[in-house]
Image (cartoon, rainbow, N blue to C red; front, side):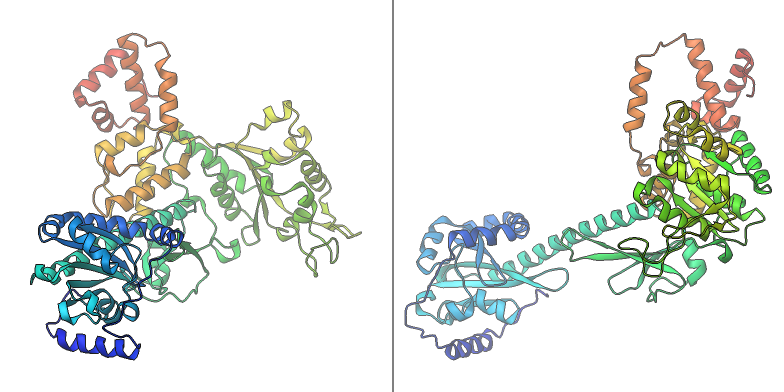
Length: 588
């Protein structure tokens, strides 16, 4: 891959001439020239289009020298076919006499000793001048070639500069080498861009997961990156070590668009309560008074045997609460089983929830299978997205809750089951009952203790929660600039905690250990734009009303931290005190 070139060309030429003789080529006989058919050439050019584009950029930088020296610059693929040419048009006409043109093959076995063929064979830079060409017909040429390699060391082809022997220049070979180096650098840059895209894919993947031990692996299965949770398990010196796949990590592979470059991510999935890996209430962060009250109610509910119904928008932490209620309950040593009710097809409701006996239906496990209720016996069954369950599934679930027994599919015997039910939904179940989409009797069975989780836009502890998530996600101690804080406070967070965590993970990545500024906060503005459009049509109100509203909102966002509120409002602390007194604004 080096551009260093030898000065002992006679030895290289002699070796090439010997190979030509072994191939049975005759120096003074006509050269057997064949141009690739148009259809075949079109396909080659299509496949080589990215390489040709980068080569054109390189040739543009040295076009003046090529034109003034009456020469032609060529790009040749790894098979010896010329796929791109620029340069002096007068020389190009003469070069066509020996088919030194796009679509012609200059492989050594066909065209004898020539700079293109020798550079491909020897995989090193070479000049072939005048009589050094094997075929007499080519001896009016002087040519210099340098091989081009991919970032992984694969031979891609050759850069060649050719002209009439009278236009020989000592620097032509060096120019070919420099052009090849420049092309290789551009290829490396393109490869880096693909690596960056893979990193973004990797980031997207991690953002869809709950916080958990996470690793990034290279093609040799060595650890490239690890979050703090993973380092606590594998050791602080884990980076660079080979990953053995132990300790409960599951590996997922991420590929580029051509399936030629890949990375892997390894994560340790949450396990059941008897392994102590479910969430606890101390994992739930927040100082917002309304949120703290909900958390306290959930802690009290954990000590009872009543069913719990968790209500809240997607991403507000319903499963976090469900797991914490289980781990704080008397059933914490027993299984916690989660079921996504919206993902169960109607035809599989009974078999999924209640299990089935051997041979119960075509395609069934030959030994039968336990259902979710039996798997959660004596423990907790978490019915997530209960509001999306079909009416048929609701009827089956209600029967079990009323009778306390299950009957596996294909069995005539019932089994007693003892499970504590925690259900969750983002829907308004009372409205669903009125609309006839949810059974009223099932609703009242599930809502023993009802907990409403507030959306992020209504919480007053956004900045505190942000710092908590950053401390958990960033490698270095995170610092948020004032502009970044303001961006976070102004967003409505339709995706709630899940969206916030996603934005912060990317911000940590982009900040690379430095302070997180507004340029690192990447927020989808679709929701913000929609909100702005609605507000644009709303009555403006008086200046006094607007000012009071702005102060009240900011005080609520900062949980009445006057210094932070004054900073966000861009007024002095004394001015803020005065306006609070003037407008009679009270804590709420």
